[in-house]
Length: 127
Image (cartoon, rainbow, N blue to C red; front, side):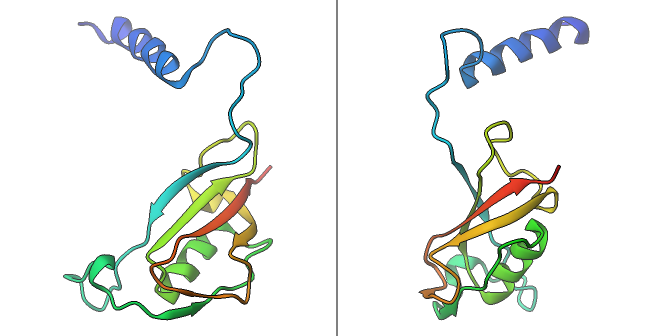
């Protein structure tokens, strides 16, 4: 199949799967979360987050920080299960954290959690 025919077909299929097109106002939630797997520590390339020892981690204040810096900070703290969520209506998924700014972290800053606990960082897209 030629490329010029395949691209429109893929676009229509993507819209259909995403629920695009007609039907009135969207009823999607205001916040959409996306799990971003934390990288394994670089000191042991064979280690994976699932084999890392569970430890207590105090969550930092992330408000106003660049998303990439937050991602690196949480990874360095040893968190293995954090999600980056969009607060924005138009940009629903955090694909490249460097283009986003953190607005809050849940549980809150200063709270102590286990390193394998789920932590959600809500972000907004830079203008």
